[in-house]
Length: 62
Image (cartoon, rainbow, N blue to C red):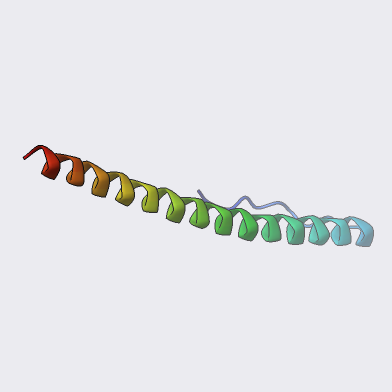
């Protein structure tokens, strides 16, 4: 997804508010990305464990 371009406001107060909001958005993006990576790692570990248990149950049947 392409980043959106917003024209820079003319007044100083609006520019400061925009910079502050952009900083918060970038920080939140980093936090959410790290949480997503952590959740993905946990999910992949659970899938590996499930595959291992399935293989063990199949081996017990044979």
